[in-house]
Image 1 (cartoon, rainbow, N blue to C red):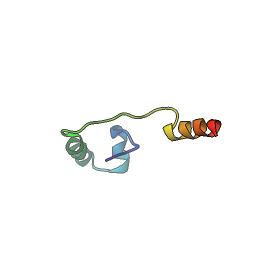
Image 2 (image 1 turned 90 degrees about the vertical axis):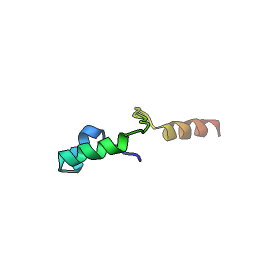
Image 3 (image 1 turned 45 degrees about the vertical axis):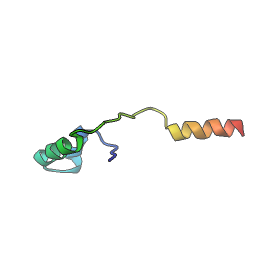
Image 4 (image 1 turned 180 degrees about the horizontal axis):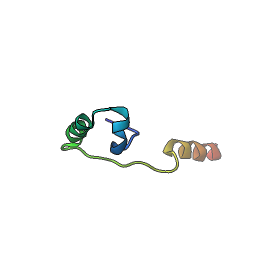
Length: 54
């Protein structure tokens, strides 16, 4: 499962805060969370690097 929103913003998407808390609890139970928020896109960086080589 992937999401572009931080958990704190999920209540903007779903109105019921209790249900959001339950959903986050179930989604994150025994899971691995990867925080991949970076300034530049990896794909954009690779495209630029590959373009310079060609």
